[in-house]
Image 1 (cartoon, one colour):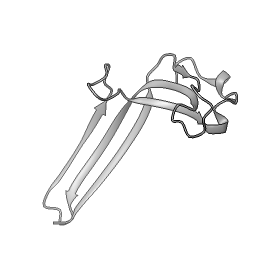
Image 2 (image 1 turned 45 degrees about the vertical axis):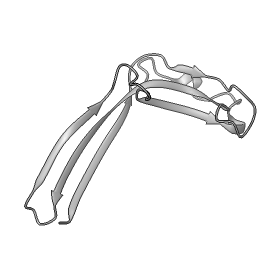
Image 3 (image 1 turned 60 degrees about the horizontal axis):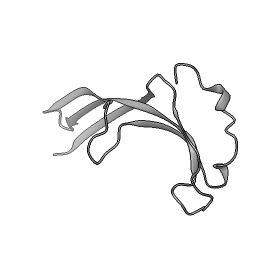
Length: 102
């Protein structure tokens, strides 16, 4: 049976100050050569699924915003990142982060 699925996800920052990350190395191949800001985040997803013949359908909303890390995983994050040669440059948006973190 052919099925149709639609997902519409919206990611948002939680209010509050971000964690500021600075490069830990200048090695261009290192995954630690990045700078940026990391906010706690959450996602809301609306979904619909149906058989193409119309005999079955479902719809709903799911939200994901854990407060604490899960063993072996991390919480949701919204990240503004600069890497490689850009990691050491000043972020032009540094002064433009609204107080509510959005």
